[in-house]
Image 1 (tube, rainbow over the protein chains, first blue to last red):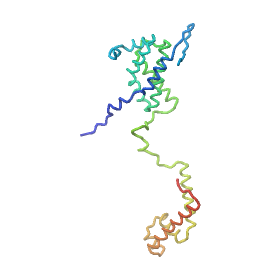
Image 2 (spheres, rainbow over the protein chains, first blue to last red):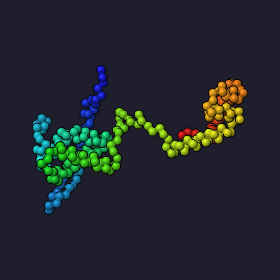
Image 3 (cartoon, rainbow over the protein chains, first blue to last red):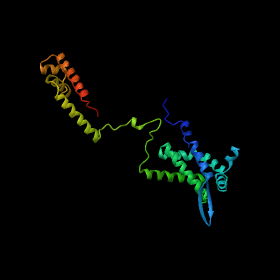
Length: 47
Length: 196
């Protein structure tokens, strides 16, 4: 029988970002605040 | 709880996030991370670069949403994909090169193809080594030098050498052996490096 040269689904499941990347983004989002001041917007990163 | 969150549309989650619900972002990332990550990977073929572009994509998403610059008319995922696509283009512009083969874990393209031709430096070294070997051969006793030159440079068999020099095959073999031993001795004595 002919071999099927296809990627197994296991491989495609691993194609996702690392846990720490996602955590970094969530923490970045929590730390970032936008300050509105006289029609101007300022970004502030608070850790 | 998870089931409930799946039912909430992207538009509602984005709206909640803009209002300050940080958990909405977590749901959005979890929902779309594989699609976005795979999309980036399909362009750059490199895990580390994909991770960087993925991170930069969401940093841009977070900043745009928090600054209130997000246009709600568009759909969330196509918008994020467009940001990722632009960042991939930026990446290639910065590196000024086309996507290359992933020399990662399973398969290395250079184990199959290689450049066997010598570069300019290697040609110089090769010529130098060959010139050094010739000078060393000149130092050998005449009978050994004769056999070695016939064998190695003229590619003659020991039978032909024996016929040309008028000595037995065994004598020719012996002279060849001593020629090599003497060459090695001189090379060792003077610490000559004959490698390319």
